[in-house]
Structure formats: C-alpha cells, structure tokens
Image (cartoon, rainbow, N blue to C red; front, top):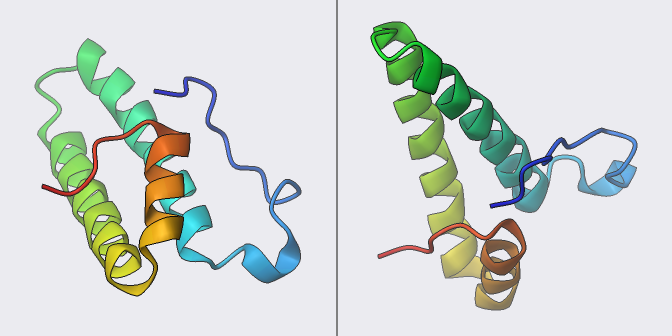
Length: 86
C-alpha cells in the first residue's frame, strides 16, 4: 500500500473534489491511520467500530464505481494497491 497517502485539497482540481476517486483516496488514508492506531490500542472498540463504518463506506463507493465505469475502477484499485471486489 501507499504509505503517505494524504490527500490535500490543493492536489485535487476543484471540479474533482467530490468525485468517487477523491472520496476513496480520503477514506483509504483514514483507514490507514485508524489501522495504525489500532495496532497500538487493540481494545479501542470505538475506533474499531469507526474503522468498520469507513471500510463499508469505501466498499459501497467502489461497488458504485465498478458498476458505472470499470476502467476508472481498475485504475483506482491499481493506484491505491488495494484489493478489489470479491
């Protein structure tokens, strides 16, 4: 996975800030941060719940993108180096 995946608003063009790709980038960076946090604090159940919610939201966005445009989906999966849909 990409370690330093911080999405700064200045890096994304203004017309693409609400796009599915930018949302997935943002959620992936939050997932990475929460995963690192849970490595240190394994019994933080509130963070575990938040992580599950974020993963579910990212999964729904990826399903949407897969149905709408498979080329963009494949490019995003390859760029983020995350596992695709099963």
